[in-house]
Length: 403
Image (cartoon, rainbow, N blue to C red; front, side, top):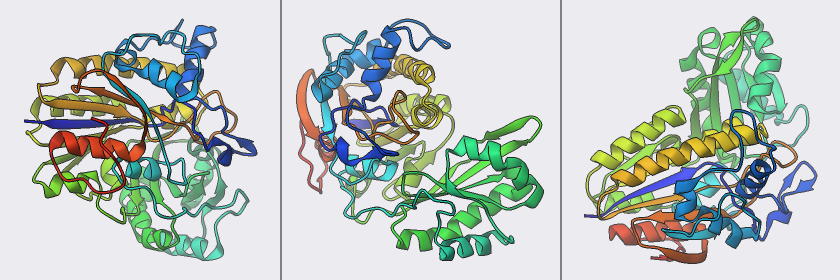
């Protein structure tokens, strides 16, 4: 019996998006951004030597077709990624008007976003007065800190001490459609933070703000502050059936790994586990060994994006890719006959690019278990249609299977 494993390498784009010029980091358009291509070039040129050295080494991902997919998507040189593909491979383009987590994941699951997201202006303050008042009420405090655009780690470093003194939550946003709340797990309370996010979510969702994100942290001003793994995303539910629903309605079990349960508001999802990427890789290994026939496992590995892409850390991103490639080799060894492993991404986050925001890029489509060859240029939604075809379940949405 067939099983499917859909793995999203968060932000691992491959350049070449035809509409990249409509998306920006500050005033710079994303034209020419290429996460994997530029990392490979930096490694080959000796510009990614912290904690690693030499050309980018991804034998398993490249063996499935990663280098070939980069060249197809963008025409970029891929030093070190020149293997003859042994899997199905291609490059996918997005039509949703966003370069964010919900847009990418919903469309990979067969549902392009049918509206434009609301983004807060890059001003201080950035939130409308009614949103600020609602946040103050939900927190039960006299005010909030932040009220601006900021990288998450930077704003915690800047305002963490004041937060500890006042008890006010740190509220901030980014170029994505998000309202983020950072608070100390013990000083403010994790449960209180989650309740605050849950209370604010309906109002912000009505405004078409995609996610309210709880960003808990620990530490102090002397030792430093560090975010914990208890992040929680309160996302708008998809406005229609998606891949998880298709599989569930056909009687298959659906397992979410990482932030998948949050992204889809558990729609069609039976189980959900979270943790660090290393812990999530162990969960995925367990599912490949133990998941039932006809099941879908849908996984997101976020640390490429959260730890290295936004921080523009080329060496760190390269290290993460090389670590993940080793785990992919382990996944491939234990796949069963009838399994399909599809590895893709939701958007780009080129660590060589200006700014700190995501970058609009095509994404790789790498498939093990369904033969070898190029599927060419495909749509994000074709990923869902192809997984549905592999599992033999009815599909909806605009996608077409490339199997």
